[in-house]
Length: 221
Image (cartoon, rainbow, N blue to C red; front, side):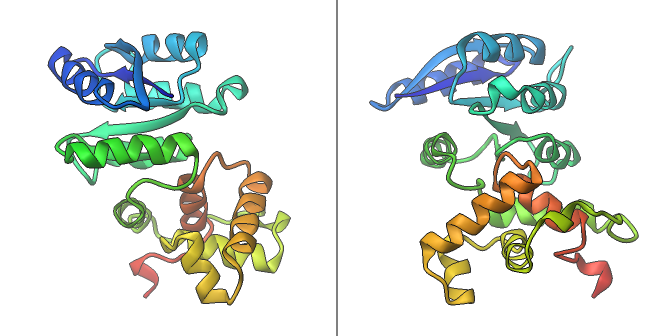
């Protein structure tokens, strides 16, 4: 059973999500809160599998709450999905940096929300990789150039190559095909890179790929 926490300041939105999720045999809503501070408190107490987190809430917002959850080692298995009204929301990029597993636009189709909850609960993949990659590229491109970083020194050449491909939005199967590897080997390389770089999931690998210049946004041609 996938245990979900809802964090949104609009009661009607929470009610709609709760009804949709609780209608599924494999998903249950274990709580709902109206601000980020409550979300963090309930996450620490209940350890949900997934938190659906509105990024813009009064008081402690979703960005701050995501940062606190991402920084707490005891909540390493809690996956945050950011809910936003805009698919290119600058705060979403920050949330990905702080450990969110991905994001959904609030007017997404119900079937996509259910799929997203299941995907994130498995810890398998970044949500909507093409859209998230576009978001990261959009805001990375506003910087003049990638920051200098030694964090990639811990990676082997193959792992750097893998991280770059993750940054381009490729799945494990697509990486395996590109590099002529087995899917299992590609998955192992991704997992090792995540561990070495301290990334919770693929979303953070995408951010690292852009910030360190492994994947270069449009301003570099």
